[in-house]
Length: 491
Image 1 (spheres, one colour):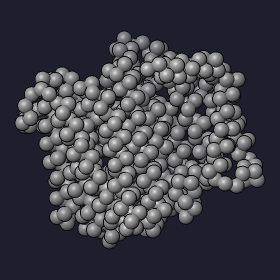
Image 2 (cartoon, helix red, strand yellow):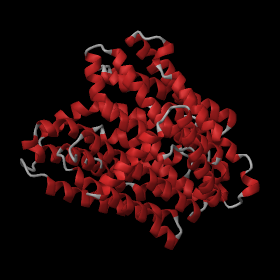
Image 3 (cartoon, rainbow, N blue to C red):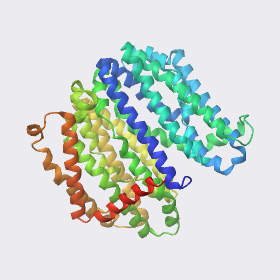
Image 4 (cartoon, rainbow, N blue to C red):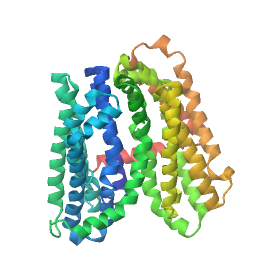
């Protein structure tokens, strides 16, 4: 069980969810402790890192998934070569910021405070990049049991590092220093953990290994840069075209819920090997059958979440970030409109068919169009135009990019390409229980109680309608839950 693909996928998904939750908790706490403008400057620092990080690491951590299983007897050399490259790249960026790069970046963002914050932040990349190798390394060597405690501990440490100093000093500088110090500790623990797991080969880095890994990982790095740009570019544009206070309000709302991407990504990790075999046999009917089934299952989770969060957006924002960020509700609701596209990973079929260049091309064009559209809409409607641009661009990339290519490749009609009927039934069953939201302000006044009680009623109504629409079988679901409880109790 511990070495199964599904188990590894669950653990990787758990790490992603945990990272997202810690990010939201950190934002929620710092939003309350810091003035809006200082909190906006803090978010600017990490938006810059989130955009440049994939470029710095060049996809090197993912290269471990390829090289370690094939050369276990050289695991130490592979790891040390990977870490040496990551530390070198992180160190170069640190030196760039200290050598005047922080001032250049601050000028481009029209925020003088950002320069001093980036100087304090500079060592972060030196410590953060090696952490990216921990998960691929442990998974590749089938040591996933050690990954969970490290993931939990390191995320909690980073949360404490950013929040606890601010509780005492109430300045943005202490938040940045705390984040750097906690990342240093997490990196040190990760290096020790990998050292203990690593048993074979020499520790001396190999220049030949570094070149091999860089050559393999550059396409992955390019794809990662484009993916992160699509995630962060709207916030980057708002940062450059407005002030930190407006960014703070926008960034708190312009987020995807932690579980959203993980649901589809987990399904992708499980389906990709099987899809590859079926595409090789040109059995596209079976591919679509499995793909449709996965879409419907994911939609049963994601579409109700979208409807509930859209209806309860004012309460959710007030609970998370306080009433002073009430306007964050607008970009939050706009971002929720992307969720219908998150029921699957649209790059799954091109990747399974061996057309990775299609993924790279779609992501590249998508980044370019988002730059143009985001710049235009921010000029017209303000900061929220960046969120609108992100939604429009995402739908265009899926429909004009991935779906158009998949239809041409499989020669399947638009009518049968997606499970339109089933997805429509899921959406209808998710919308109908929304009647519970109509009189919410008259019955319940407390935000926490309102979200809790209406959430319970809404979930119950959605599950009942899913059953009535024959989207799920209640007996099978209850039997599965009961078997899981029994198996957990007997372990």
